[in-house]
Length: 221
Image (cartoon, rainbow, N blue to C red; front, top):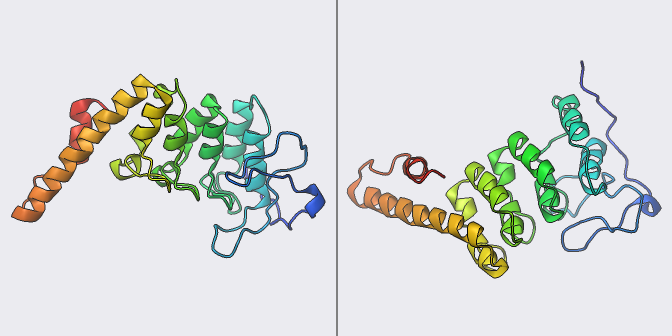
């Protein structure tokens, strides 16, 4: 079946644009119009969303209980559509994974992790928050944190928000012992990997080649 290729959208009239949270771009709960209309962001921000990308984000954000089969089918139908990217970021830097994380839509998160690129999974929003930061700040989502960190490089896992909060600090604040324990293991791996990289630099050796991968395998994460 050929992919659906809708025409590139014109911006919706202001009256039809759905208000969003100023910080994250989350749709306001008391509106029913489209929250993502293809309107252009600021000159320094990401490219405008296409109509198809807006529809995709609407599928995820506007329903309290999104239909996973519908989202899967949408992704499949638009896989080769040049006007659609599952990795797209809105003007606030939010990906579909950010929205699903912020709204605690676990099944959507599991689907997106399998479909998105590692770079998009690790992408920060305009406040420096990855989806990992959002989930680490919520108690009881250690399983999702583990899924995310399997797909993310250590540099992204250890990254801080613009308020200098790493995911580990957020997990401490949320008092989530399981997430804290998992992120502590990754912190130790990061320290060891950095140590071996330093040895390489000093000796000109190849000790640390694939060190992160090897250490993760040893620790089972």
